[in-house]
Each structure stands twice: as C-alpha cells, then as structure tokens.
Length: 353
Image 1 (cartoon, rainbow, N blue to C red):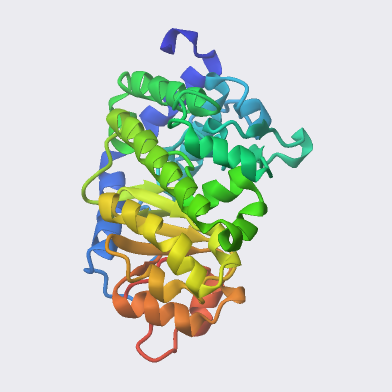
Image 2 (tube, helix red, strand yellow):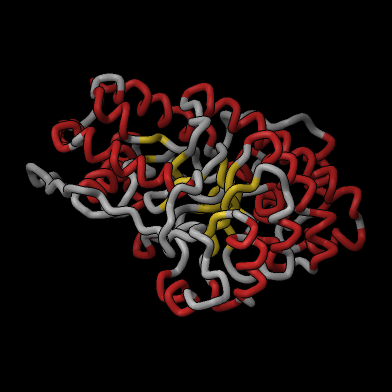
C-alpha cells in the first residue's frame, strides 16, 4: 500500500520521523506513567514535552474530514497532521486512529451511513432504524460481518498504518495507532435502534437485553480483530491526543445520561462491566453522569473517567466516586479543576487536564 501514497503524505512521514526525539518522547511517557501509577504528587497533572519541534517543511494538510474519509491516503495525512502538531506543542500524545465516526459498529448491523455536509467538517454517523421489528430480526440473525459497513475502511486503514509504519522506526515506536471509536454497548444500541429503545426498556426489556448481548459480543469480536493488528499495551494506552489510561479500551457512555439509575443498573452496567472486566480501561460520557457514577465506578477494570461537561453535574458526587476512590479523572476541564482545587482532600493526585 505504501507505493500508493501521495508525495505529500510521504513527505509528512519523513518530516515526522526526522523530528521525533526519543529522549523527549520517553520523558513524556514517563510523566504519564508516574501519574497513572500513583507516583505523581502534585495537585493537577499536566504533562509537558521537554522540547518542541517545528515542521521542517510546509506540507498541505487535509483539513476537512469529508476529504479524509474519501481515501486511505487522505485519512493517513489527516491523522499525521495531528502528530505533527503535537510534536510542535508542549502537550499532546503522538497518535492516529481510523477516524470514521461514532457509527462504526452500528453500520455493521445495516444502519445507513450518513456523511455530514462538508461545511460542518464533522465526522460521519449512521441513521437509526427506528423500527423495533427490524431490531428483532437483527437479534434473530447471526453476528454481522465485521467487514461490512465501516468495517472495511477501519481494518484496511489499520493495515495501511501497520505496513507504512514498518518503514519508519521512530514512528512505529512512538506513534500509537489506537482503537477506533466503537462507542459502548448502550450507545451502539441507541445509534442503531433510535429513540424507540427507551420505550422498549419498558415494553420489551428481554429484547433490549438480547440486542445488548449481541452488540457486546460484536464489540468483542471487532476489538479482538483490531488488537491482532495493534495489541494494546499492558501498562497504559493512548486515547485521543489528550490522555492516556490504564487498561485497553475507552468506552463511550453518552446514552446513559437518559437513564434513571435503576435503568442504568439494568441496561448498561452489566455490558459495560463485561467489557471492562475483560479488557480494563476508561469511560467517557457527555452530559450528566452523577446519577449513575457510583455504579459505574464500582465496576472492576475501570481505571479512569473522562467527562466533557462538568457544569451539568454535581461535581462533589463525581469527585467522591472518582478521585477520592483512586479512579483518575482524565483530560478534565481546567477552569473547573482550578475552581474546585480547594475542596477537602483536593484531587488526591488523580486529576489530569
């Protein structure tokens, strides 16, 4: 595949390979290691790259995600631009992913892929089926083909990265190809089923559980196939340029904000728990999570929480169930952290911005 890359992408690879300083990146990794393994003794963790490296040459970027999803070459250049930017800043992990949006797993089940208008420059997603009878048929069928929907693009892009990075020793060692956005079981089900899933929790809970079981099994099959190409580190893993976490996976739990606590316990907790027990990792959620955070943080294998909107939460409830229990709050809002630093006990060295 490397022989099909554009001159611009090859030039960017050469530029990044020349700029990576192993000593700098090892030090940056050591800072994260100290934080994740409780050797950081400050209030708020904010790693700093010892030396920044500006691009050696100007290389045209792929700025629009619609262009990136049109070809693997464009996707690689789009992702490598983030690596280049991180090398030029005091903060930022060196990483790339198969960046095909939130609908990767829902697309395997036949949800229609929806590409956003170009002017929005926003990742694609899928259209929900909004048909409970179609969901019933999905449950009765076998696990979907992992190479259907966005599966082909995800795995073929991964193969490209694996092949190309073999030619660049420093990139192979210091640039992480992290797992794509697979969401979490409840999120995937909502993306596929649509709003009807919330009615079905009352009317047909057995069907909801059956779909969640199928989705969880499909998640495992998909991530196992991905990990054959890019095995996760047993020590810590990168997700996004802004954080690292212990464990192998980053689950998304955005749909849980819609559930009352009893429904989180019934319809989300068992499936999140199965994946975290198997792989270990962190959980991201948007919106409100203080109503189920205690249950979430009781799950074995949960090492970190990344939340994007603290203003919608009773943060004392969040802190008591995360940092006070040794669970890291990752890539947290800086302004909120600084405002709450004087709370009793502080953040116990467990919060990163």
